[in-house]
Length: 368
Image (cartoon, rainbow, N blue to C red; front, side):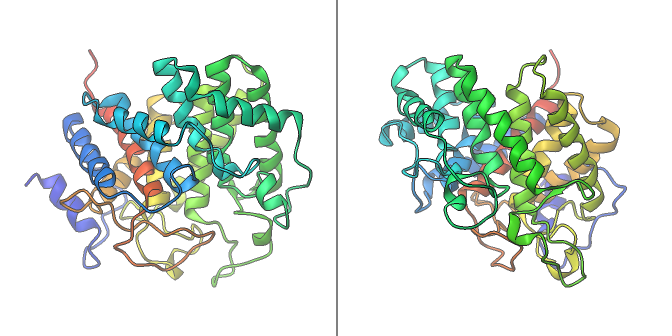
């Protein structure tokens, strides 16, 4: 067994001592990164979750499958996504305005950009055109209809804006990109704490506090945003007037997150109160690993400062992959920090893991 793999397998053991914060694991071999990604994806495909195939739980997982399909020589992951889309008749979720029912459009648009088949995005165009012509009423306070018609909770920034931006990329209709950017900053202005450089999950958390008296900033919630920032920055043209603001927020969040990583490479489910939630958590950690690696790969984050943190996160995540490929320690569906069964898994956790792995693969692959 490789020494790095042995260390990783111990990382999810409650008996394992935290690694020294200053120690940076070595860069893994690209082939090893790809192998574990494929093992995790194969387990997920062989053990489908019982969730709406057009909803956010599955849709977030599909984003990771598409990231794997970009780096894997095997066609099986891309074909699985094509079959999923066809089975769904290329429809988004049933709730017209709800961000959770838009995330699947990201994968439909990615498949259109590969296959150029109009049917893959026709229902998504119909949905978004309807929204443009019939704007939803309401504000961002997390009450009543706002919960389903507005981007009133931070998770929505992973689910919806990249879907709108990807549909712009697929169609050339700038109204989609304008909608994504405008509504991102409306939500950000409401939920982003400019002192902590973190997002409240929604307005109901503004006055709540953890046991240590600090504000409640949920790890996966902020992971959704951090991942959403990456996906928006991947799509925004260099000359776009809002790009600099997205970069600034990405770098602000990255700097804050670096201070909150625990010595074992993980971020706990409550970012500012790790002691109250000592359990390892892979979904938030996966999104942070993804974002840090992408930022390093793109030159937006300092390699010497951020790469060691990303490698520690990956080492920890590796330790939560069982021999059969099941990813464990994924906090179940929720809205705030929780204690949970360490054996739990969900497709969105797998999606975060695969997104992170795709960026690590690029970082590890020798330049040609």
